[in-house]
Image (cartoon, rainbow, N blue to C red; front, side):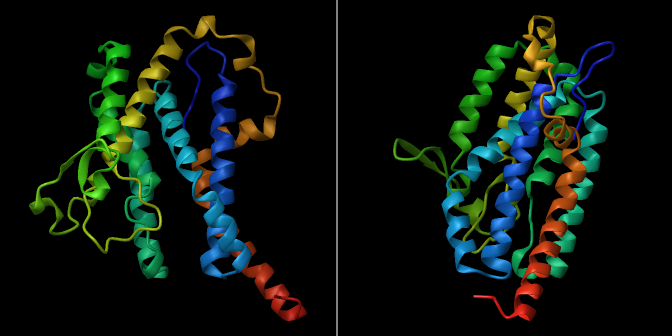
Length: 262
């Protein structure tokens, strides 16, 4: 989705590789979702629910890596605006074509909004000390992690309920504040996820500051196909779901006609 190079500097391929791994797992998860709920198949449901426990780690990695990569970008506002527009288009298309499986504030809208917010205040934020800001991001992320459940705090330790007025409708859904009945196939609201992205920008800033001290393996490219995926995550993310859907329907059609389904 971005560049991990600066003028006269080598590309940090390790970041591309991590992004590639995160995107591949996300594509596998979306394939399992289609096999579980679009066809559907029993084995698809079993595999989907087995992986449902782990997708949160992949999503977290994807967002953190996007924040890290933003430290290398020349224009986060431009990139963010483009991503946000694509995310809104995803919402419109899924709402019209798959009304029961629409995407409201999915990962593209989260990343686009985060890049725009960060880009608008980038010069100011880059002057803040990295370690205290990382600590603040971690605290706020932790405290707002359960906001979609209707409270701020740590589950089972202390919980501060949101005002009842906030929960009367879903107008605040981009911020993670939702009432019962809200549904989105892909839902990654600003709270708490913006602060994970925000933390990534400071990690990226530290990498930029100390990049001359990075070990040589950070620049090595042992798996070019993986680094290629990591360098082109946006276009691959946009295309992978239609491609997967087409493959799923093609396989289903062949199985039906060959009478070997089930």
